[in-house]
Length: 63
Ligand SMILES: [Zn+2]
Image (cartoon, rainbow, N blue to C red):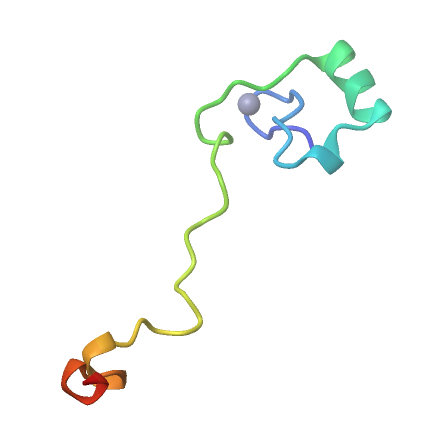
């Protein structure tokens, strides 16, 4: 939970991390503002690849 660089509490990534104990640590150690810790979830490649719509539903077959 603590930042390894400044030894402060890292920003919460989700509402579940906003606990009373975490708030107490922030009052004691402070809140980390390092740029390297403020990052969202790494981008994931979609499990299902986007298939071209022309191959699955040709426009000529609709008529
Ligand atoms: Zn930090």
